[in-house]
Length: 169
Ligand code: NI
Image (tube, rainbow, N blue to C red; front, side):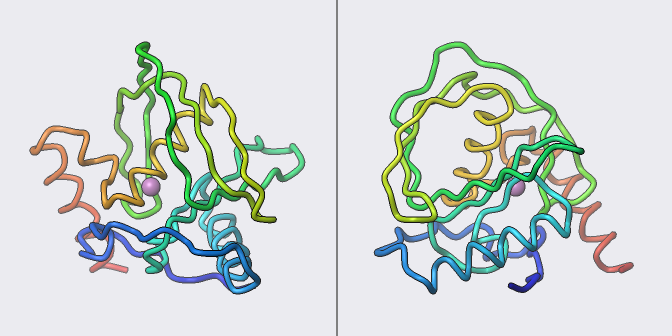
């Protein structure tokens, strides 16, 4: 496994639409292992493949709290099948927009279908932090960042701040 560099805004690669994965094979599992290691090292709770420069529809996530056993999850070709009318706000952050946090309103529950690490098809409902995280990560697969849900002023300010930070690093 290897930690890969995480792309940050305004890198144009982050705006790309990722392509579907054809098969869950060993090469894809290497990518998913690397993504999890990269996410844990950051640290973060979710990561989309495009954030390490791979334009494929793959997400990793771990919502275990500090002190709990790690609970890695893998999502290949995830699709949202249903969203609730009820929405909920959550203060989101993103490893590609470091140190910026702001509230985004999204459907409170979703039903999704995806393939897991073994390539099995899973259908399940998500709510709470899981619902927030899967919608945030699936946005990445379509080239959308959480700051794209904010006002233009807030978005421009966030990108300028990250640019300044990364130039100083
Ligand atoms: Ni993100």
